[in-house]
Length: 269
Ligand SMILES: [Zn+2]
Ligand SMILES: [Zn+2]
Image 1 (cartoon, rainbow, N blue to C red):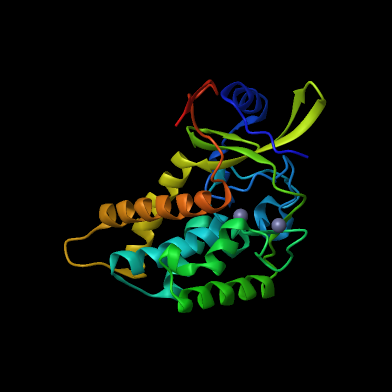
Image 2: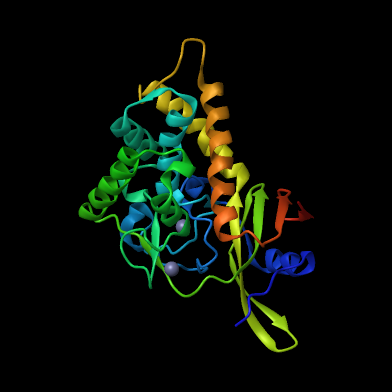
């Protein structure tokens, strides 16, 4: 099946039907930018307090929490400050509300713990492009094994990639990435990559403070929380576009800005 590259009208239709409000108590639980999550993707038992509550996290970032962990390690390499890998992991766990909330994924045909995550797959293939070192990759893989041992398992996404656009979202609404679009040849499955910019920013602000308070990151004198937040935002953009350039080069990017009532404005970037 040929992939449909989505125009603005098609994206509007998807967003209109697939938008849902962000729940305050779940807003720091993440998912990946991957377009294959279903409305009711069973997030297994890792969401302890959310067990039997099938919801899709609104906060979509590359690689989910695994990608965020990689991001912090990359910041240290790229901006030349010191970190304690283990403390970084613990700080992230605190911010997400416990180990059981650690979100990562694979897919049904790649298997493994996170091999089906396109973002993580690219990191493994070319970690230098992501400002990571071999020891960082080893650390990430060690943590995956640890999570598995603790019963914190990956979400297993099903099917092929059908993403036809990239959405950058701002506001207190989120978007399910899979949709059946009515076309002349009947309904067709379409998907979008989703990055939830404003929720990602919000969590990174809290994470920067946590990392400093926990001594997970040792900055140069004079560099404070704002600096770390800025650095993380820059590196996050690097990581996101590195992966887009590899996996979504031909796709249009749309920014989607929601107001509180769920009305939205879409612009092609
Ligand atoms: Zn795959
Ligand atoms: Zn992924």
